[in-house]
Amino acid sequence: MPLFDLPLEQLRNYTSSAVPPTDFDAFWERTLAEARALPLNAAFEPVDNYLSVLDTFDVTYSGFGGDRLKGWLHVPSHLEPGQQLPVVVEYIGYSGGRGLVNQNTRWAQAGYAHFIMDTRGQGYGGVSGDTPDPHPSAGGINYAGLMTRGAGHQDDYYFRRVYVDAFRAVEAAQSHPAVDPSKVVLAGISQGGGITVAAAGLVAGRLDGVIAALPDVPFLQDFPRAIDIAPRGPYPEIAGFLGRHRDKYEPMLAVLNYFDGVHLGRAATVPALFSAAQMDDICPPSTVFASFNNYGAGNPASGGNAPAKDIEVYRFNNHEGGQEHHWIKQLQFLRKLLSS
Image (tube, rainbow, N blue to C red; front, side):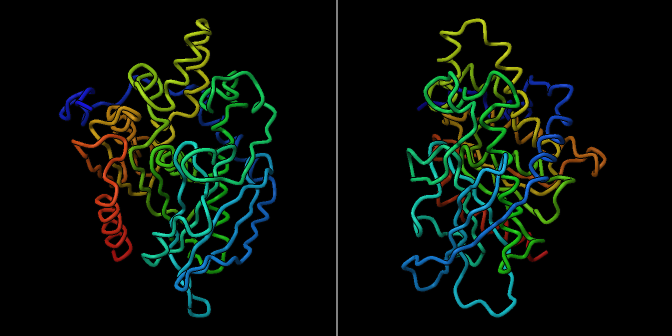
């Protein structure tokens, strides 16, 4: 795949043309207040993971609308009584779920508690999942996939539920006795990266304890540009729908605008390490840079100054991004953060 997006010098200054809705903050304040009025009821059931160095818990907690969500919590074995660990809350890429009991344990191998959120209605591709999406709008008219599910109104849109699930996943992780609730890191790749950006913005001023965000090649950023230029992946689901429903472009953009990471990440207050791939034709680099450049820029607690942030750029990679090379950079980032 050749370089097809803006040159790097332009990417570093690109911020998107999207403008948040006038009731953006009120919408999310209402959404999260409704969710948090319901009991979390987090439960952790020990399960056999067939590994001698890690312990795993099958997690169940209440997300959007009180719907029961699944997850895994992995922790290193043989913790001292009362010992608490920093926790990485991981969100999964599009179509994937939490996977099998020992399929993804790398953060626990590095010595962290590792909480993996199962994404509702997904787990049909990539890795398996165990959480349905029971919301009535899930059965409405939409293009194949999830990007237009419930997109007739912001209250019904699929990612409203997912973002609330992600917020409550942080609360669930914090409730386990092996987790240090004051040291929560948010992480994810692609869709997981987009959820990471959203969660970082939504917890700001509402939930203490999150200390960093690690969004890799994040999806769900700068919808207007992404719909126009992404030739592959989930964004074309929206273009496919609009190709038939020609009068829905403006109304759909108005709904998507509530869920754009470019807006959600502006409220973030914690340090972040992003990644972008310049040959990425699923999450084009300009959409990632729009998110990065806006991240933390609207944080009133800092007087408008963005929190510390950095972005690693992988010039010759597509949507796979930095992979194992980038994970080393993340480990270094967290080691430095936690030792300061």
